[in-house]
Length: 492
Ligand code: 5GP
Ligand code: MG
View 1 (cartoon, helix red, strand yellow):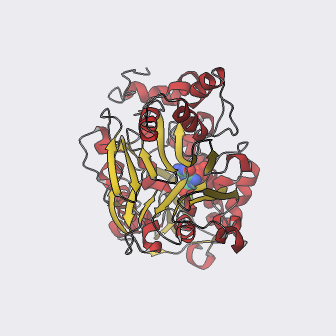
View 2 (cartoon, rainbow, N blue to C red):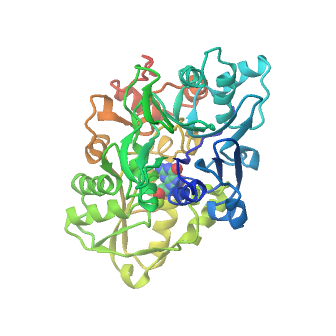
View 3 (cartoon, rainbow, N blue to C red):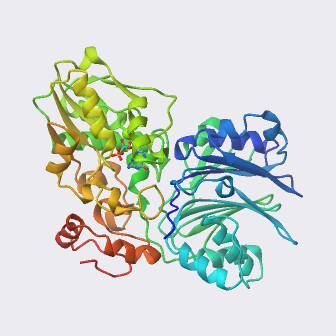
């Protein structure tokens, strides 16, 4: 099975004379969503041109001339994050296709769960793929559709792909954006003072370009932006809101709003509820792990009445540790990234709040760093539930083998990371902290990695998932029968 999960950032603009620069700035503020590759495609109303490469957006366009050449009034861009083995410039987006009758730029955030089978049937039907990315599947579906207009073809294709996705597409006449039927991956629309429309994975990109938020693209919707204005349409009514909880827990920037909820506020509340559920009365202070858990740590400190201290410092010039492909490099990455402030923690009992434990590498290293700096006790508190199940809709965790909580009990994980105590936020606590109010399971969140409940189904991943279930995962599913796969299948 190909393993090409992608959690990325997308940005687009329509009707702005500096479309290239606006997109560059937008992508720059989405850089936390992917550091492996970046690209921009622009349209001048007649022709589409693009540039893409591996690396950070600032590296890809280090040579100003590369950005200056992309002149036009509309653009889409992408920052990419992908797992090892799937690198290479062929997979960097946006893709730009030149057909005899039109050109199309396309980029995608998320992961399709039926891409492998779609690709197989498309290939049997004569399609030739140029990359190993899911994004190309959409283009083939559109080109093969018998529907009469480009928009109708797109609409039809959106009903064929399954999983978590947002797509942006650019033609000389329009900018399109689409969101999956569960709105797993967010997409928001804003407007600039001069009237230009922008679309983005996160609202944090609006601040930087001076745009105002106007609306989100909802589950099962697409948006079409042309010189006549903006129009949103439904491509399916078979929708259930299930926004990825991980966007709030870890992925999104704290200043972004998703479905009206500020990410920082939700993290802080998660920290508060964690302090209520799992206090650490004997501790001297609370410390966060920069940057991802700082919001939760301040919430924990406020609720518990313990001082919030700066016990760890992050070297801001090291990219996220997940982008390192091997465990050995990952171990090294954590050390490069974080140092303890000895004068703060020495001789003290500290509560270390982090946002999540995936493989356990980060927590283990941090406990070790704190103990080396003289901390007497380290009580680890995690502002999300145990990460028990793989994520198939985007984000780099599609394998149970890598999930420490799928293999070890809380007590065993505690011993593994060398902490004096370890507690996780409850599933209910996280739902409460985020505070969505949709009339849907988990109030509109996708909690698959905590509950094994996959709102968009599993498709090509089902066999591998089922055969790889660990005793801990099976036990969880057996004890939580209310959590089911939305296709009606119960996995125990
Ligand atoms: P671990 O070392 O346990 O595998 O990783 C957990 C840490 O990595 C957390 O501190 C979290 O902030 C960070 N992290 C980096 N990328 C991801 C991701 O894609 N998902 C999650 N949940 N955490 C991530
Ligand atoms: Mg972190």
